[in-house]
Amino acid sequence: MLLNKNNTKICMSCQQFNCTEYEYNEAKRELTFSFHSKQRPDDVFCRYCGSDSIEVHDNNTTILKDLPIWIGIKQFIAVWYHRYKCRDCNRVFSEDIGFKDPDARVTLRATNAIRELLSLGLSISSVSQYTGIHWDTIRKLHTHVMEDALETRVKLLKEQGYKPTYLAVDEFAIHKGHTYATCVMDLETGEVLWVGKGRATEDFRKFFLEYDMDYLNNVRAFAMDMNASYNKLVEEYMPEVDIVYDRYHMQAQFGKEVLGVVRLNEARKHKEAAQDIKEIRSEETDPEIRRHLKAEYREEQKMYSTLKNSRWSILTNSKNLSDSKKTALDTILEEHNDLAVVYAMKEEMCRLFELRDPEEARNGWMAWFEAAKESGIEALVHFAELKEKRLEGLIAHATYPISTGKLEGLNNKIKVAKRVGYGYRNDDYFFILVRYISMPHNFMLIPRKT
Ligand SMILES: [Zn+2]
Image (cartoon, rainbow, N blue to C red; front, side, top):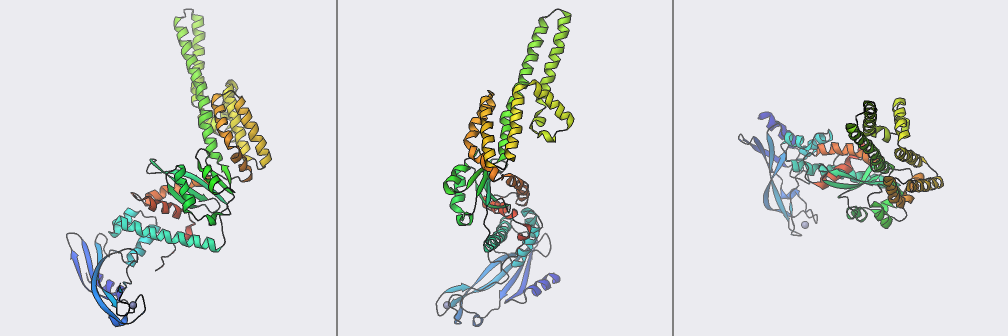
């Protein structure tokens, strides 16, 4: 116990408090040090008017959580401090406790240790277990640390005259996919500017109402998934900004709703053909014809499973396929006209997204939609009719080849954040965390202003 007490005395010797006693509660494994103020009113000035005519109004006690000297033993500091009254302005104020965190009933040395532990990547619950300090208190402290860093970062960018040029918006799942959040990113710095709960249009409207729009008056293009209604609000609040539809969302949707549907349709036809052959064969008596039908049946079954298993080859860019895979794919396409058509449309779509000349892109996309609608392939016609309304945002990609890809990349960081804040029950905390982890690394350890 002696070492414990000595340490504490050295720590606190510069301030007006004296540690006079401690109490150890064996059952609760809690250690409490008592600190009494030795400050005299003569040494105090009024916080409000600066007068030196001060008297003690009354005394008060507060219990601060402290960093444990022994792991596993919770540590507290009971502080007896004065409340003063100014004889000139009559106002009452509390004595300063220099070693207390201004925002929580925790000692500053505990706050600093918690910051260090969190910056090492320890989860909130680990830090909570180690320090014996409640999860929520640590979360609050962490929130202050992150807010300070974010504020400093924004201030610095503003001082440098920086303004974002390209933005992206997308949704991401929180709470195991039951709820969603909408997220806006500055594509040049990769920093998340805003996160809000929900993914409906009205949820996204909050961005335009809450965010400092002056900071965004240099924005030229906004990347987004064409399926959401983000575009309506961008048109409403940022009419000068070009909307760019994200190629990856569109390609993924084409893969699922056109390539996937057509491929499975063709596969189904083979299955049905195989079934028919089987029935005919069961009534056939001629052994020669029976043998022939069996071979045909096998051929249909083989085609069925080839198509069922060709998903990956069809979705992959043909340049990335091995020679043997490519030959196999060519055989499939030769024998299935619809599939060959939608496959060629996929390849052409990828090419259109590579164009950098808006005029060429316009002509290319218009020809693409024309061909799609004339194909007579139901899934493709339907897709084209839906997407043609978004023509301008597809052409804009030639001028501003931006995407929401960087936001997808954030998902891994969000997974880390979920681990740090494991068990988080507070969305605001989680959203600050998402913004915080998107900052450049050297900004994450800005020391706390005290
Ligand atoms: Zn006063």
